[in-house]
Length: 376
Image (tube, one colour):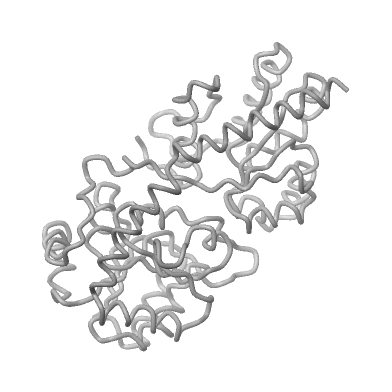
């Protein structure tokens, strides 16, 4: 499969699990891109989708339409009338930034769409609040988190490695340069994702890393607009020896990186006009037994359960982050126990089988409600 973005992966995984159910008939419409094309060509896609959805509504083939994100949900603005006549429910999933993107014509369209959808399934309570602010009626809000496939990493998943020696051996095998730059008793913090300002990496380096024990290292996977700022923060803090920027981590190496490290950190900071809708990377980390230490803001607050898969802290709280991480550096047995708990909590709470069931229940409920309203 060609490289895909987060929202596309979520849509594909949810679709696959909905199609696997025997209580729904699910049709796929123009979701997967042709081989080698990594971006949707949005306008041609919307034109084809509009014609096909309208045809299916008119022929009575569908009871509900579920849009996988706001860019496609804009079609609700022109499909609302034929859907109303046919008693077909129009529903959408929202991910955060796709709701708040700061572009005046787009925001006008988002508000128009909110009044025409029969249900919105935001991936977090925070995203749901943004939908309500833009005109979504409260009774049409169904907060539904993202999920993760237990087989997400397939054959590349090394298993949950509680013993430190096993993690170290994996690091030496998969990331020999990183292993050479760190000691066997060092605590490895890991963060993976697009390096943008809201992720708080530069803030963490400047304000938290100096407060951490000298054997705590930060491993960063990914790149983005903040990559140069992160490097500058490391230089200015004189911490370059303890900060390891890997660049983009190949898909087949992700599970190994998560499993070889000790803690996942997501020190997000609030940025006007930007938003962390959920934080799927924390599910990936948890699946590999990697607990998260994260800012309890925006969609992250719906992922972190204190003492189960990590700990949530107030954004900007450098002392809180440092104290929490230093405790784990000093008491490794606490970290081993939390590692197993993180995987168990992720599998019990966030698997796609569980989330797809919730989506299916919402589709049935909203479809029934729409048909009843149409009949009257």
